Length: 364
Image (cartoon, rainbow, N blue to C red; front, top):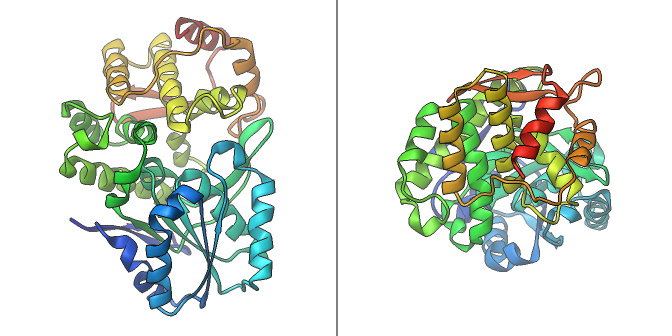
């Protein structure tokens, strides 16, 4: 099964190509975009060990001159220091404005490579080749790039759309089970904010916590429907002036939890799962969402093997303080994405702090 999803942006339109073994078509697909000959492939050691040789061979067979560079894996390496290292390699290899950076890896590699490409020579091409479920369905699409500040997640960044996204479902076979589960959080998110049918398909599946237990047809369905949902939203609102904010469902508290635990306790998707539980409970408290819908969501998050509770020793006040550093704060008010029914959400900054505290305390 293969499919092509178009992200229809007026000036930066591109394709998401989803197909088994598409990693071997990377060079061929890039050739058709009339890119410059120089390519810097950025990855991490583990991903590069699995897929680096194939990616480079595909690029070189298509006539590209390839340099590769590996950054350490992990959210705590998503810093300006890592970006500086990419810049150094770009300078050493004389990357030009027509050159391309290729991100081969998960969300951290994709975000950093995208940001480096957005800022090197004021912007060069980037191609995303996501290797984790989370990156495939979410971070590789839409052009959000960036790194973390010591006091907040993704506070430093730029919008920079890729020229192409290549998704090869077969690379998920080497993805650790915990990373697969983390990616499933973003899939569930699309079911809540946009695609009730996707939610139904997930609810009907017996297992969601390991790739080997999830049918190939469902994986293909997940990839195409999640990417289509993201493409639909981004096509209508490229730079988050309105609708695109709904993609942050679960991320407001999720990011705060990541930040106060120094990005070491939870994977991004795990924190988003906790954030979705919190947002759902807040919506119930405010009378926006039915309790049974919140329970359906939480059951799905648990089925995906994701946490739905906060550590008992986590100080709630530190989470409340971290919320004020969120990128989405406007006039001092924290904006939440809250569900009103499965497949429909609203954005509001009218959430009383005492409700947030009550929900977080109940989650411990």
